[in-house]
Image: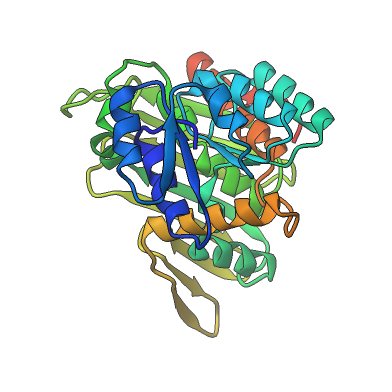
Length: 321
C-alpha cells in the first residue's frame, strides 16, 4: 500500500477485509506510518517506496499524491509487481501515455482505480443499456454534486490546486465511455461560486460530450451541493432510464412497464470488490476490468473538458479512444 492519505486508508480497510492478505504500508509521513502500524492487518509500515517493493508484495496499490503515480507505477512494473494506480494515472496526458507504454512493454498487469465499475448499480445500468432496455440512446444527462468529498478529505484539499474538479470526477468520463463508447470531443463552461466555506477554482462545470456514435451527453459537475448527487438519465427510442448511483437504484420506463432496480450498498463494498479483483489479477485468475488504456482515455476526456472550458470552444480529444 503506497500512500496513507484519505483514499489510501480506505484501500487499507478494503484489503483488510480479504482473508489471508498481509499488508505492508508506505508513507513518508511518520504519523501516518504509526497509525497504519496500529492496524491489525498491517504487518509493518516503511518510510521508502523502494522498501515496499523490496518486501516482495504480490501486488501494490498506488494511492499517493498525483505527482508520484507515474514514477511509482513505473518502478512497480519494472519489478514485475501487479499494480492498481489511483486516478488520474498522471498529471498530464503525454506523461500518462508514456507510462502506459512503459508498463505495456514490461508486461506487468496494471489496473486503474475507477471503483464505480465495481458498484452493482453501475454494472446493472450498463447491462440494461447493452440489452436495449430503453432502445437506442438518444440523449444522456449526468448530474454530480459533491461538496461532501471536500469535507471527507480535508487534508488533500488543504493545498490549492486549480482545475481539480475535472480530474477528481473523471469517474464520469470512465463510466460514460464504458456504457456508450469512445468520447471524441467536448464543450464546457466553468465558474467559481464563492458561497461555500471551501472554494475550489472552478467548482461548477457544465458541458457536452460527443461520442463516436454521434450520441451526445450533457453533464454538470460541482463541488457545491452538500447532500451528494450522482445520477445519469438516458432517453432512448424505447423508453427512459434514471440511475441514481449514490442511492443505488435504477428506474426504467417503457410503453408497457415501469421497473425499479434496487441495489444499495455502502461505497466501501465496491472498494473491497475492487481489492479482491486486484488480488485475482495478481494471481492470474482474472483480467483487469479497468486498464491503463481506460485511465489514459479518461484523462484525455478530462483534459478536453478543461480545454473546452478555457476556450469556450469544442475541443477534440487529444488521444483516440
